[in-house]
Image 1 (cartoon, rainbow, N blue to C red):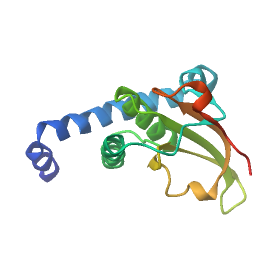
Image 2: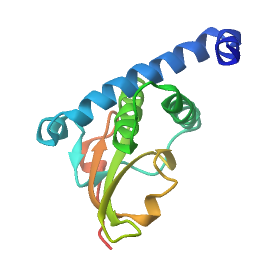
Image 3: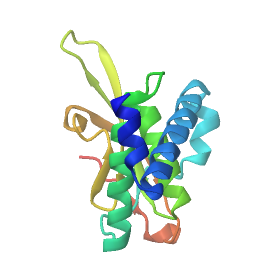
Image 4: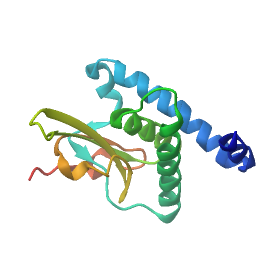
Length: 159
C-alpha cells in the first residue's frame, strides 16, 4: 500500500511518465518475442551511431526517461530483460523526438557460455544497460535519428 500512496502523491506529469514507462516496457517485451528480422528495420540505421552531444533540455528528458524505466521495470509483473528495457527507452525517446543508439553485445559468463546484452544511449547519457556494458563486445548498433540527416550519423568504429 505504501507504493500506491507514493505514486498517488506524485504530480500528474510524473504519474504519466511512469505509466508511459510501464506501457513502453510491455511493448518492449512484445518486441523481444518477435523475430529480430521483423523488428530490426524499425530500429534505425544499422551499424551507425547518433552523436554524443545533446542540448540541456534533451538531456533532462533523457534522464527522466532513464529514471522512469529503471524504476518501473522492477514493478512489472513480467520480466523486463535488457533488450526489452532498451526497446522501451527507444520508444519513449522517439515519442519525444530524441535520437538514440541501441547497442547489442556478446560476451561470456563465468562458465564460458555465450551471453548477450543490450543497452541504449542518447547523447552522452546511457538510458539502459550501462551497468555491465563494459563486459560485452559490441556486435551491432542501430542509430535512431529524428533530427539529424543520415550523413551526420557516424559509422560505428570497431576496435
